[in-house]
Amino acid sequence: MKTFVVRSGVLAGSAALALATVPPAAAHVGVDAPDAAKGGWSTLSFRVPTESDTARTTGLTVTFPKGVTFEFVSTRTKPGWKVTKIEDRSVTWTAEPGAGIAPGEFDVFDLRVGPLPTDTDTLVFPATQTYSDGSSVAWDQPTEEGAEEPERPAPVVTLADAGEGGHGSHGAQTTDDSSDAADDDSEGVDGWLVGGIAVLALAVGVLGASLVRRRSRSS
Image 1 (cartoon, rainbow, N blue to C red):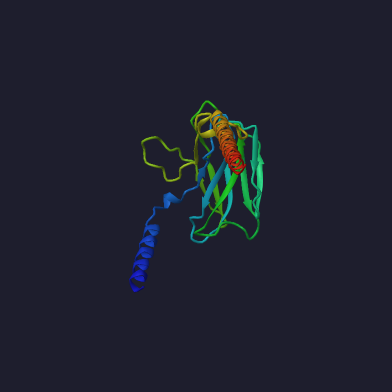
Image 2 (cartoon, helix red, strand yellow; image 1 turned 45 degrees about the vertical axis):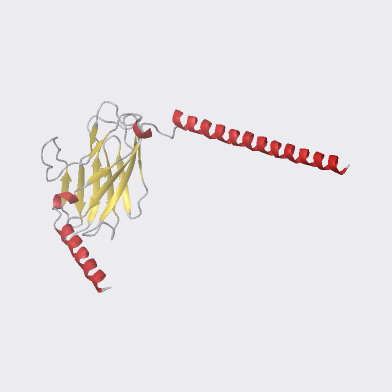
């Protein structure tokens, strides 16, 4: 038991040290969109950490990519925050009095947009984070391929080709593979039933022959 406690303490200390040594740039505003595909619809989840040691995050403005117009933009209901949408331009979340993201914490802000463009591989969403002390941080620096990540990178969504992994459509679709699988399952059930009936018929036949023999001997 003592060995386990000591090892656990060492592991916990190592984990804490690893977290403490993570560079501040790793905690920037980012976006997750695993279902984003060209021509499809996607839920964009913006991760917003509070890097200040004394102030809360009280606002986030996400600006839409240049030259891109979404036919549909919807925000997820978020208690404690007011949402303001400027058509074709941006969405702003503003914390209500007493609310916000405390130092050392993060929160997620969701957008549902579509259709996504088909003529580009990436979408850049510049964001501005505001704090309760009146300061703000612009996450709008471009990330160039092969270069080091900038200090304040803009959130970027990478678009998959239409149809990859079932993406690229507004609703669920049934693929040919699933239809074939259903047919195979159906054939398997039918074969099992036919085999079972054949075995049952054979058993009945054997039993009937046995009864006839017994009657013949008794007579």
